[in-house]
Structures are given as C-alpha cells and as structure tokens.
Image 1 (cartoon, rainbow over the protein chains, first blue to last red):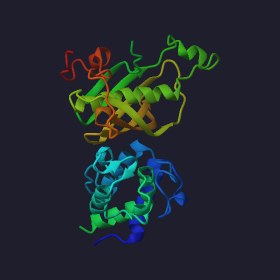
Image 2 (cartoon, chains in turn brown, purple):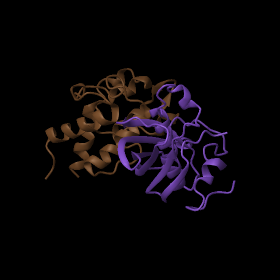
Image 3 (tube, rainbow over the protein chains, first blue to last red):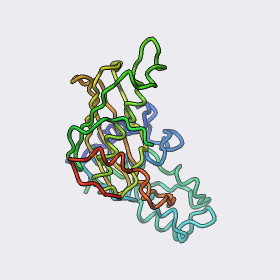
Length: 129
Length: 158
C-alpha cells in the first residue's frame, strides 16, 4: 500500500533533521535545502544515502539533485541555464517545480528550486512505482 | 610524518567493518596541556581516530584507488572522559558506499564499555562534481597507514 503524503512528510522530516542537524519545525514544505536549512554539497549525498535506507529505494546519481550536468557547456553558459538545459532539467526532474525560473535562469538560483517539497515529490513518484 | 591515532587493527572485515585499538598514555605530550591537573583525551582526537579507522576501511573497499577524505561528521557523542591508562576501541561499519562517497557508523568503547557514537561521511575526491583535479598520487594512503593493515589484507606496495 502506498504511503500517505503525511507519512512521507514525517519520514522526510526525520531524514533532514538527522542529515542537517536542524529542528523539525524548520522543515516545512517550502523550506529551501541550501538557503533555509543550510545544506552543503556533501549533505546532498548524505540526504540521498538516508532516503535510500528510509524508503528502501535506489536513487541513481543525478536523479534527485543535479549531477555534473552543471559542468556541461551545452546546459549552462555564461552563468545561465540554456534553453537546452531547461528542457533537459524539466524532463529529467519532474519532481522540481521550476516556477518562473525560465524568466531569469541564473544558475546560482537553481539551488533555490530544491525545497523539502521537491524531495517529497520525488519520493512520492518513486514509491508509487 | 602522519599523526596516527590508532595503534593497531584488531579486526578487519573488508568492505564491511573494522575494529581498531587506541591505548591512551600519559607519555602523549598533548595530554600534559589538556589538562595539566586532569589529563583527558580530547574528543576531537577520538573523532580523528575513528576517521582513520573508518577511512582505511572505506579506502580498502575500493583497493585504495580512491582518495578518501573526511567530508562530514554526521554525529559525535562521547559520554565519559577518557584518561591515561584507558583503552579505546573504535568499532566501525560501512553503511553506504558509492562511487562518490561513503558513510560509516561507529561506536567507541572504553575498557570494554560503549561510551559513544561517531558517524562519518567520506568523499572520494577524484569523483567530486565540481570537476576539481587532484594530484595523481594517492597522498591519503601512504605507507604508515597501510602498514596498519599488515596481516589482515594485501595492500599496494607503492
């Protein structure tokens, strides 16, 4: 039986409090992982490792968070995500809400798209089979 | 010179777990200042000892091809002071290992009694996503580190 949204949120909250050392009341769906919860690069791997254990899922590199695509000049040029990059990201990351990122695709703002809700969406897609 | 904070391995199960021993002695100069009236082993050095135990376990799991660097102290809790004459054991196991990184779970015991937990993450730095290049030579696993494994597993000669 698939998990309810509430069960997923509780488990994601537990994962993030352990991985990032934050209090559970800081973990809201809209909280950004880097800006609000202070995640650094190694933390993203930590989160992936913990989610794999918690939800018994396999998360391939680059599936939940961007991999080395950011070093690909076809996808990122002059500090902006290119049109090809936007297509690639949207196709490979349906769990991310890109909002109006297209209006100003500054690569430095990409991290703001990764929120607690992003992880919840990903886990929901993954556990729904 | 490497400052090695474990004396020897007691158990080594490749890719799975390891136990290393550290005998704490008043001959260690740093204890004279930490503190003069009450010498106590700094917890930071217990973390280093666990990092060396776990780091060697993680390095051996990939035949010492990767440069394994401590990237994160996920948890470090030590409940009791450790003083000269005590024997510490660092018990560690690999929780997850991938091409990019590894996480380990460790328990510290003092004279046979569990006194704390140290969980760590290591990065395989040649696989870092920023594409940064490091020297080709494996500067992490040098002779002194590898000699600790003598009798447990075969180690690279160079």
